[in-house]
Image (cartoon, rainbow, N blue to C red):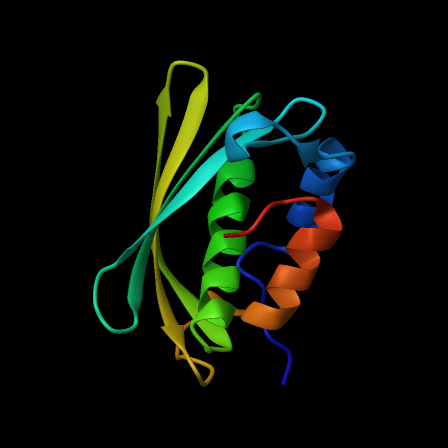
Length: 135
């Protein structure tokens, strides 16, 4: 069975072009050529429902902040011993020069029902390959 990533591979590939050469910056932020990843906050909403608040600057791309949230969700699922996550919703806002995403994911040990599911292991590897930080 093939699992669909949270974002189409072509979209993530496009993001990777702007993210190559990421390096650690002060304060836990990770900075690429133009994008600075400002961190992730997680909030356990229920036993298997998790909220993620992520922020980045240096881009106006909603796809970049959504990918950052998906990467955080995939890593969190692995940390908790789960292999999968399902995207529930993401709200993106802009404040000053920063984009924020408030995303909610359902994490589970088995492939959950729904169209927007991610395989945590595959997604985390893909995020690392593309230079997108995880939790």
